[in-house]
Length: 252
Ligand SMILES: C[S@@+](CC[C@H](N)C(=O)[O-])C[C@H]1O[C@@H](n2cnc3c(N)ncnc32)[C@H](O)[C@@H]1O
Image (tube, rainbow, N blue to C red):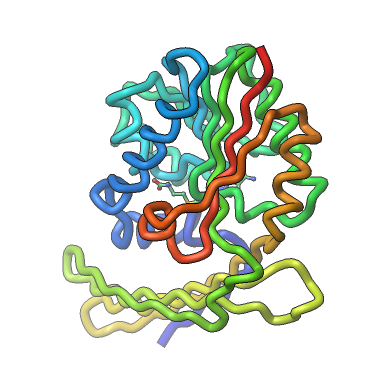
């Protein structure tokens, strides 16, 4: 048996093919619909151009591109290579949401499922400040925070399976706070990969930030946005219990 333990984001790089098997455009449809409705409900002027930070392999962009001209940014060239195949109409760039810069100005910036990777208020400030710079006056920032320390699913474990071309995958995700004094948690992905008779296992530990709603909100307003914090049953149903959304409007 071969085993590989990693502490990076291997699921988005060397094992991106596993991500491709366990995620799908269909799975992202309800989140995309939620985001589209929220943009239309909160926009000050019609949204035509949209910057998607942490766009991954483009599953959400498949839905977003029906409504907006989408520019996607992600750290992982492997995720982006899949995204480009799925959405040749979108404009993709390798980059970090904390530092990405474009000469273009957008009507909206969204961070729908990757902002939990930020590890400190200083990083929030970098991302919100950067998003503010990339927006047109009156533009909208929408970010969804998946986990709330006051409602954290300690030790929650989910399992799913997938198969393709003779390879069977068992994909396990576990969420855990190892140290209650540290504002972070581990999302650990364990993958059993069975190729014919051979079993290979992969363990990938992602460390993500875990901050209270008021910390997020303070940093949003400090970056110059008029902010709204939002939590409703539909969002929790689409993402998970405890998820909340930050909406920031750049003043005209
Ligand atoms: C859950 S995945 C997004 C999946 C995406 N919705 C899709 O359709 O495939 C989170 C993504 O955030 C990206 N990411 C994490 N930290 C980032 C950062 N600082 N800047 C840009 N992308 C980042 C990862 O590379 C990964 O592709």
